[in-house]
Length: 371
Image (cartoon, rainbow, N blue to C red; front, top):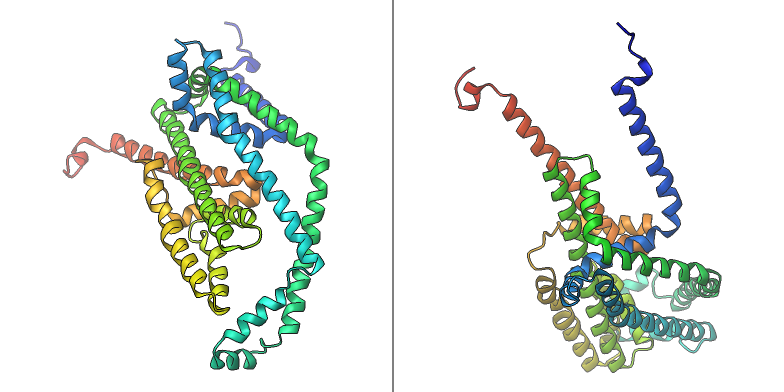
């Protein structure tokens, strides 16, 4: 009887194959890491616009290349081009605002002085006791902070020219990957589902939840934030607030964070109008912010998200902030997606353990009888 070769044992071969797969996966992740954001946004956009692509696919009678090209063209025209124009306007207004602050055209101390003089006497007395009535010292601190911030912003703007090539390369990588995701999306999703070493039901639920959270985050958070930022920018422009487009963008960013929202931007402006005697502007901005901007979330989100699963707001806030710290701007979507995958995976594990306990329980115990 021949002696079995220990190097050809099935367990050793499987473990060696597993090590090879893990090593190859880590190396693959390493080489695509410089374009991680581009690939992620290609996947996110493909998921969100997949229903539109299906319509193009039906209209082109199953020609996947034609449908993918049509979907990519529409996304360029209705999403990427407008966003590029808005980004250019924001950059221009930010540069103008920084220059006005540095030149002294905008006097922060004057605004503080107007607000301080408009305060009731008892409030000013409290500020005196707290040592907060020294406007010269406060102005010096604020201007110091603004100067350092403006210098950092100026350095960042100057540094944009150094990363232009990287941005252009990443942008075209995103478009290239997006085209093939549209063209071969169904084949890729089936291949990924087949290769994931999980039960088919668990794999299906995991991929479904991933797509659901991406759609809910992009449609329910990003779109709502853009609408709220646009409404806030319009209000600031009508009221004559400098840098309306810039502050609208800031409101859009703040709207992405639950429990924060655009109120953190428009409320101080409304308070300033109130204390400086411009009551019409104060009341108008407060009404616009509380009613129009505030109700956009309650009105638009159910329409855009529909019955998609929503996570608790506190979890979305923590996941979004953590995603921003770890992944930068991409974390607005990646953070909630990781949190959703965390919840789903633990829920699947709990259900699998319950099913295993039921299967291993004696028949009499399963029927409520003593074993």
